[in-house]
Image 1 (cartoon, helix red, strand yellow):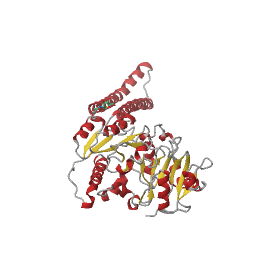
Image 2 (cartoon, helix red, strand yellow):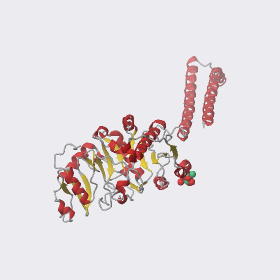
Image 3 (cartoon, helix red, strand yellow):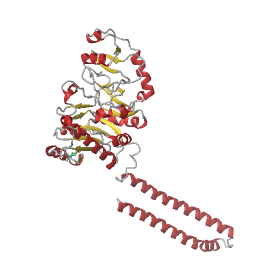
Length: 434
Ligand SMILES: *[C@@H]1O[C@H](CO)[C@@H](O)[C@H](O)[C@H]1NC(C)=O
C-alpha cells in the first residue's frame, strides 16, 4: 500500500515537473518561431500586440492542460484511499462499530453463545467479538481459542483470591464477576478505544435481529441523556406473557434489565471510578447510579439464557428464565420509525394508554373473565399488593431500589390470556418508594 502510494505521488510530481519544463521551453522558443512563420507566410513583420495575444492563448492552453493533470492525480488519490484498510474513511461516519463483549469463565457452553453470535452477525468489521475470560479454565480457553481470528480472546490476568467478610463467603462468585466486568470494560473502552459495547454473558443465545436491534438504538442512546442503556431482555418475556404479533414493539423501562445490553463509553467513565466490589447489577439499579435514567427493552426478548449454574441466575432460572421466549422473526429496526421512544412523546402516550384503560379487578384477570379486547388496568396500591398480584398472575414480583422488573413509572405491562394488562399504581404517580 505504502509503496503504491509513493510511486503514485512520484509519478504525479514527475509529470507535473516535466510538463512545466516543456511549457517553459515552448514559451521561450515560440515567439521567434511564430515571427518566422509570419514573416514567411504573410510578409509584413508581426506587431507586439499579436505576439502578446498569441502568448496569452498559449498560456491559457497550458494552464488548462496542467489543470487536467492535477485533476487526474487527485482522482487517483480518491480511488486509492477507500481501499486503505488502516483508514476506513468511507464507512466510518455512517457505520458505527459496536463490539460485542462476551463475559466467559468456566463454561464450555460458551460455544452456543459464540456460534449464534457468529451466525447472526451481519459484519465482522462492524461487530468485532471480544471474549473476555476469567477463571483460567483450560477447557473453556481451548474452546474460545478454536474460533481463531473470528473472536478476540482476552484473559483477565488477576486470578487471585478475593478476601471477603465471613458472611459473604458464599457470595465470592459475585465479587469475581464484578472484578471481571471492571477489567473487561476497561479493556473495551480504554485499551481498545471503542465508544460503545454490547455485553453478553456466556450463557446467552442471541436472536436473529439482535445486531439489527442494537444498531437501530445506538443513535437514540447517544442522543438522549434520559437513557443509559439498551437491553435485549424482557424480564416478563415468557411465552404467553408477551404479544407474539408485536415483535417490533419496544419500551422504556426504569429497571436495568442487563442480559444483553448496550453501554456507552461516557456512562462507563461515570461508573468506573466507583465500580462496586460485588453485586454490580443491583448496584446499577440504585438511584445514585441510575439517576432517573431509563433503558430501552423489547416486548419479546432478543436473548435467551440457557445456563443453569450461573452465579447470578440460579435463583430465578427454574421459575422464570428458562421459559423466556426468544424472538425468531427478524424485525428491520434500522428501517422503522422509532421516534415514539423519545422521552416526552413516550411518557405522554404511555400515560394516556395506561390511564385511559378501564380498571379491572384482580379476580377477573385471574379467572379470565375480562370482557372486550383490552388493554386493561389493574391497580396496585402498595408493594405488598403488587407482589401478591404479580406472584399469582405469574410475572416477576420483586423490586430493586423500589422499581418492579420491566416497570416504567411504576407500570408493568404484560399479556394475560391474550389481553394486555397494565399493572399500575394509582394515577398521579411521581416517584419510586425506596
Ligand atoms: C472463521 O469464520 C469463517 C467464516 O464463518 C470460517 O470459514 C472459519 O473456519 C472460521 N475460522 C476459525 C478458526 O474458526
